[in-house]
Length: 116
Image 1: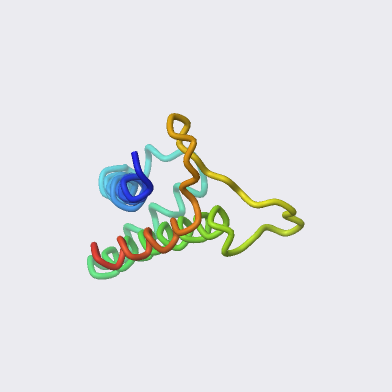
Image 2 (image 1 turned 90 degrees about the horizontal axis):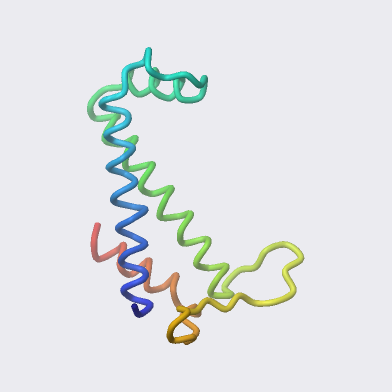
């Protein structure tokens, strides 16, 4: 797998498949099935909003996923760093041992822009 394939698969897994899981969960879960308070509050909120607002809600979830992935990739690429981070990350595929980080965030954001 090359870095572009990695980014595409990452995008599809988190930004598309996970979003589908969230949609299914919010659409099909019955309130009485939910045990935890956070889940109950979230589902009650979702059930109260209009269909248009539900669409916006899922767009927010998708954008949050995109922003989070972008931030993690920026860390891996060395664009940003963690507090007290003294060394850089090196991300490789085990078989090739070729460094793949360095522009992952750029590839990811470009892919997102082309596939919205």
